[in-house]
Amino acid sequence: MPSGPSKPSVLFVCVHNAGRSQMAAAFLSHLGGDRVEVRSAGSAPADTVNPAVVRAMAEVGIDLSAETPKVLTVEAVRASDVVITMGCGDACPYFSGKRYLDWQLADPAGQGVDAVRPIRDEIERRVRGLLAELGVGAGA
Image (tube, rainbow, N blue to C red; front, side, top):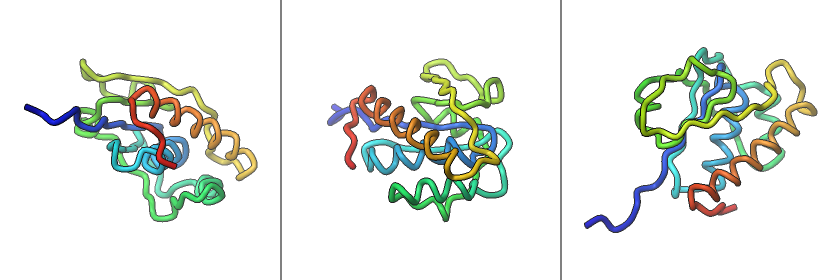
């Protein structure tokens, strides 16, 4: 008999995996700790994470400097309970039994850190709400 439910797995997807999905994954990892499995990917990944995103996240104590954009794979979607898209739309494969959400958020690409901060803060609010929905309390 299982000792309890397995931890939920969340995949964040945006086109370049250089901004929104990186921030969301970092917040979920930071706040959810080892109580949630976190992935992020892009349908057309960039070469590097947006430097303004790295700076904005550093302001809240989260280091993204070592992160690199990753390509979206069918395996990543299949392994996730919740798939949250941020502008990739139909580029994300669909599997029955998965929960799909679409977070409409401004794209930080080409923006300075001042423009990224409100996007970062909105992502943090949504991640905290997601943790509550998943029954995983925020640890930080």
